[in-house]
Image 1 (cartoon, one colour):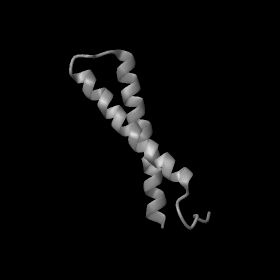
Image 2: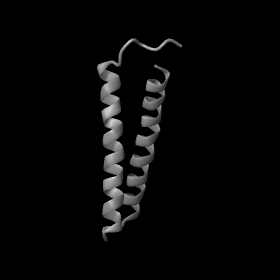
Image 3: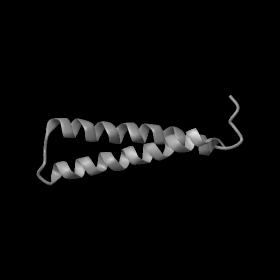
Length: 66
């Protein structure tokens, strides 16, 4: 598969959202350790963190192949 010549706006937007997901997941998990513990919060924080890392992995692969 051939890579595009440059990163499109859509790709950049998805990359920024992935970074925001990781940051938000870390923020939620940080609040859980400070006394606001809840199971839904734990599930949401871990889900956002892992999904954001998963998406950033593909961004990293894209730049590594260039």
